[in-house]
Image (cartoon, rainbow, N blue to C red):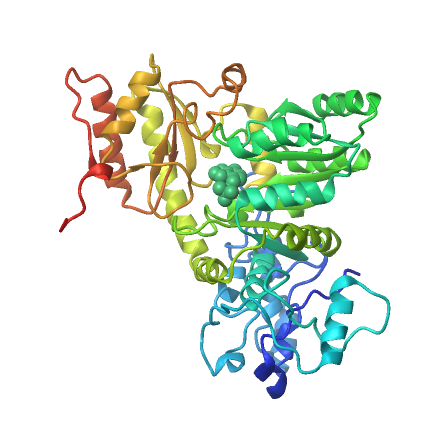
Length: 510
Ligand code: PLP
């Protein structure tokens, strides 16, 4: 059984009043073991192969209906609702924290401290021995906090809550999505071995995998997102034949920006058969619409800058998986110093309380906009998990996704960079900016912005054309978003386009 990774003492007052009960994990340490009722109730519409991601936001259906006998037993012995059975959105306001630890404060404070006081030298010795894994008796109770690079109460509460969404045994939060990805890969791929990864991936991840890791002696090979396992297996065989066995398969699903899906269960099975780990970047759907660990992935990573943070006001990353993997990842986090800071952790705690509300609203808006764009004569193609063209892709969607999210891309018909730029320069409500997953809608040009460092021939092979526009749909009123897009699309062919300057106007009062 994985070790108890319960929260450290929040501070000494907590220890005095003996508030240790809530530090117990409420959810099972094993990822897929003994799921809560809400987790087994939902399945993606239309597929009955038993592998669809359970939707934590759906109400239980058949599974929660009691037989008459069960109901009569319940009547005799009424029991209070158990936290173990509650949905993540119900626990995001309270899990992992007790007000009596902070003078009754309903919300945890920001623990802006670099270091933590020990009661006596012996306690300090034991804490360090435990942190360094030295032989000898372990101190009683949860690990003592030592220094904020190793751990901090805000980080621990945040990690406990993130585990709930993804049904993970453990997690580690980082200073950025790239910090989570680079630290995890360096922690998990031994020298002398190699990585295979799906393309497209986010431009920064692409550079890490295509340039930096090979320069450091970790060869990599790429395969097109959505490939059959046989294609990937062939790459793994080639790498093994060159003396660098593949130890990690990495992919985004949906991929950024084409939203191509890769089958998580198939890739995890292939990876495990070859003694490799399967790591999935789940940034685009977030834990609300896809839970890769439930489909066999070993590690899931996020840019928490996106939907988890959700307000475009922080930069953060997460890695989640088994206690053993996260222990190793955290060791590297400690040594590289890539951990999240307490203030951003606190902001993320606040964001998680509205994750379901925000993502549901953005998803509904995106579905409407995707349909509208699809019917627009100036648009030749829409890339969106809710509008997949191939049967194979739709099948993967039904197996592992419970919603399409709110990120899409589209191609302008008969267009190139100039036409795409006209559209980008014409939007007024939607902001021309990179990133995604915020409350506001953002638009950008992958070929010359987020994916500019992907070589041109690779871009063409991946379908990232000069006419492609990426749109992250926010929570504005959908009619206003459609009106903005409609106006901007009209400007593409206008003889005298009226270019917006909203982002560059002087601030009021200046
Ligand atoms: N993964 C995906 C899918 C992304 O889109 C991004 C950034 O845009 C990252 C990872 C990197 O995250 P961060 O910018 O938080 O480092």
